[in-house]
Length: 250
Image 1: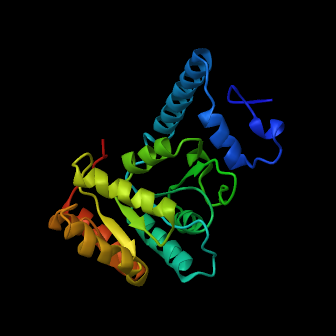
Image 2: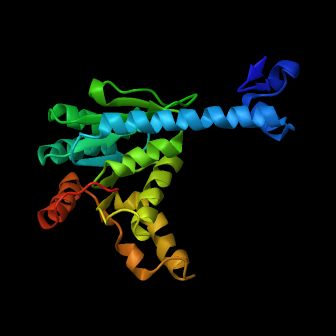
């Protein structure tokens, strides 16, 4: 049997798990025909995801992305806070974009849904953890194979970022936004980190290691605001847009 044009080594050696199978297949010497065929089809798949995303999101208007862990349960204080933040931001006139899954993503979409606003979900195909939550507007429910395409959609159609506690995926989304702002690839849109206790270790490392070693500039520490309440998070977004007009990022 073949996987993406290559033989599935797990069928030849049942002792291999899926990760070992991927490793073996990636290291196997491939023919030119296999390489060019797989790469060409990948280009078309990537293009299709971009086109679909652009077409569906082109007219959604100003939005704020809410990032955070898929693993937090509805009884979590951060889940409840994300619902409240999303409701209040929606009432300011923004749509809410999340990763479309459970946990904080569900909370963000739920807040937008409760406030009868635009609730956008950009889901990603994963073998575990991720599934669509029920609070997304059907016309704004999208599914992606590629993380990098999905991240472009987050940034392209957001005019602010609220970052709740989360794991590697949340850190990836946070640093993506900060990098693009730092390098002037997008405007200096507000980034709000919710939970000073949760973020303190990372932010201390920014100062004690990155800044000290000259890896970032002191002004880069102003790219984000740390808050501990929903009202503080919403107030920072509101204050920014009381001062500046809303523009798309690209």
